[in-house]
Image (cartoon, rainbow, N blue to C red):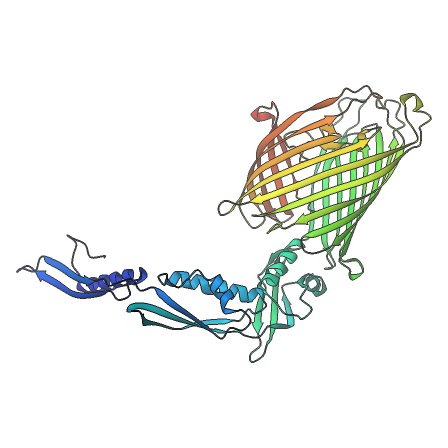
Length: 544
């Protein structure tokens, strides 16, 4: 009751209070409750009033019958199993509304999105002198909706063909609620749209046909970012040189979904890296993506490396991908007389397989799901200058194997928050390990808080724990803790001792949407670092 002792009395409010009391009793199942009398005793000067309310509660009236008519596709037994409303219980309006939503959702899964459910009657009846309720539901099962036409809006650059191949209607062109969710997820995963609207169905009047509406908003698919620095000469005999990083990305060439990425980086005078990548989706209109990559690295005054990769992604379904991998890796030692490391003149021909499972609910900031990748490759390593290195025990041919497992687990405990746990394990096995064979730790790779490629490892086990708070659809703030174990065996050729240990790093990061693309920034501290010793890493997020 709103009417309270020592508060101003209002007759209209008092009548509303009586209605509230009746409704409370009905919600509790006392449908026969009645307010018999009310007395309002005013004092002679009408400054005070005493209220008396006489109530007959009656007995709880349970639900005795649930009558369902009009259903043919879903059996009555299956509908009742979907409902929390049961005979013998008190009828709850809120629970009944949720039950109707569950029934409609089940019909949508079966390709019937336009089913109507109507409560046609709720009445009292006697059962052995006990009052009970009878409730009737009438279900109007519309025929399966067939998509007669697909209308796409907002794709100013992207070809309709690219979007249509991701819609993947059933052979009978019927649609379900799950189909609509999958369509949106597949279009999001293309990563060429700033926004993908929830697909909608518009039914054509007096028919079983409908129009599927798919709305997208084009994103900024051509990005460029870079940092250029100049290191002046240390003395009159020295020469200055440029350092920096340049990234180019074209993610939707001519609106076809094809992609080209290019990257150049130079950390110091003698270390330089150049990389190109190309992706051809749905090669020959098959569920097959072809990826080509080229990497050239000049490592100090030690060696240069040229690597060609060919990867074919076979799309088994929306979650599973099998990739076949082939690569050619050439290491050419430098002719520089000041070279301190002994490096073999070699090439590796390798092939491998990669299995990938991805059921994340969002590719930008997942709130749930896992991303699991397992990879294996086997290569033949040929040494061209084996005769020169015979004193070090070199043979002309070696085998080299790589194993790796990568698991990302996403979960969310409250709105806008996501927890990420990432586990990685990898190993390189061969009789003669060299500089180009190792995992490279540092920067944004594996364990943050260390310089780029500060540690090399043939065996690496690492984990990342990260808590993210969403700032926008693609941006977030994060705190993280990375840790892991690495091992680099004794290099008897160059007399470099065995290196192993436990590393950890921690810090904060941010990912923000900019006109150039998604910019990532991390500030991380490594093992033994003071606050001012942290490493800053930033750049456009590359999700090739």
